[in-house]
Image (cartoon, rainbow, N blue to C red; front, side, top):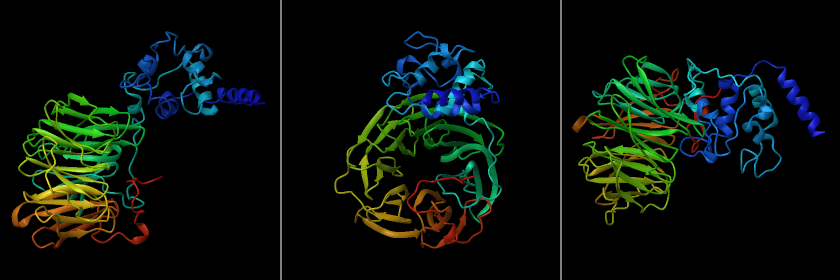
Length: 465
């Protein structure tokens, strides 16, 4: 009975419209096959990360795709074989019959490629289609990343398939940079601008890193496509290097402005959640879900030190203003200070806001670190007394990212939270300078209505359609 049903299904699909490789085949490959058959991990020496690679034989030396003949194509045969030890994908459920039918029809129709370049990564093909962000967001989007330009007059924040630009003095939106990753998770101006590094992607499916000219958004360059999200980005003060980290456990460094990849290290055993650049740009620190933090040489990727005192995922990291010390924050609410060689400082464990995740760290001066935590608090830390020096401000939701605006008596802290709100607070007197919602259609200077606040403690989602 199953054979009859399957045959009927295949026959009915075969009479449908021609199959599009980029629209119908690519999503199946990305979801079900790419994890085991890509450049970094090509099982059986067979790769699926580009169309060009799909046509090349692996260890079996059998032709993977014979255009017009699905039954003679090894790729198709391995999807329908009954032996679980040989069937693809291995150690997983078989592909749904409807997906197998689509692949069979595509091969029988000639395995036609409808992309622009057959060397383009499969993950990049997922992003070829232009997606228009809504004119007004149905609800405020979480502020998962932000950056200030050199003179502090432009604040850019994460959007849905776009980067949003604001005037921090009044909360008014300046511009919208379109055709960006679905989720923007890392932002960093290159030497103050106008070039901006953008990191992000689609969780579990693809990641990408861009260089975009803020003043002329049409001038842009995609530096890399990845198998999973790029989660963070940091540039050197001199604008010569960009370092990124992501959910593929890797840290990459690019030279600027050409965007050439200089090194690519699997620096951690789990996601690289946060990066910080030293004040002189010679070192970069990384925080990982593998419970470690590391310091690497920017120019070579050589690991200078590994800090292993956290017993939980490390969520945030920052250099002290003199560049001689690193502070890192964990999911248990603890922050720890350590030297660049990975040696922890004695009696320096801090817990600024109880047992809640430390999501972002910075410094307002050499003696005073700044922490942002999942309970919505932004706190100044007294490192000598090992306690909270002052609660600078408090959001209604988890605070994900921090920026420092200005210096001295006019210094301000910009904090962005999961409910989409930006708060700007003066350090000297803890007074609110400005507050607005960083989402198109919501950027009025007022709190987010409770009915529109997203659930606390969830990951940063964009608008759903």
